[in-house]
Image (cartoon, rainbow, N blue to C red; front, side, top):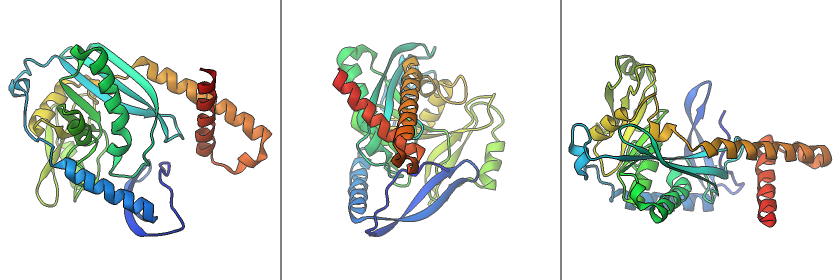
Length: 320
């Protein structure tokens, strides 16, 4: 069962459907009740998504996008956030820029960040886009010649309940061509993991094969792509900004040495080191506090790690 990433207040206001992921049963849906402030925040975010959605361009805006071999494309970027298990507040934001088509590292950066916005399914952009924009801004300030010509985002773009996923959000605010590549299927308007969907996956015989994912209304919001001959599991590609779906799928395939495209798969070497150090430090302090303060015994492991991380961070700030 996934970690619960939202708080429920005793002051109930309105129901909301939450889609979660379980290792045993895949995707499932449940209904919970949100407090008035939480409901107001969601309504505000819905309005903001609708406003920003109008700026999404589902067209090829660059000359290299119209070239059969993407002539003129030299730099591709990838962004993602990595979390310590049990801690949904602190993350490592990373940006990688690779050469195209050889996929050699030109630039990489990672930084521990604190996410201020709460996690609400379907509104990931409000939580994760700010630190990713900061990473892009840093690159533009110090080495503008290495700015990526297109960004790959580990998540969905138009393939989203309101057609405005993380890749769209980042694309519009950065004004860069963006491609959303998700490793798992998001259930959107009739597109579900069914026998029919599995039969379509089984029909993908070779690397580069794909099939469209059309909603109940008939609108195609993305494509399932068999990105590698060595993996039968597809990735789910959708438009983020300033690119067409066909171009996004074709470009994603050319960036795949394995199942996941290299700009997303390759992470700065410092990421794992940072997360391992933080995780080990938190475990040591959590164990010490559990042995000295019995009042912590009722807390969950996730709560302990999260609280101890904040103490470690404050302590490190004092040392600096």
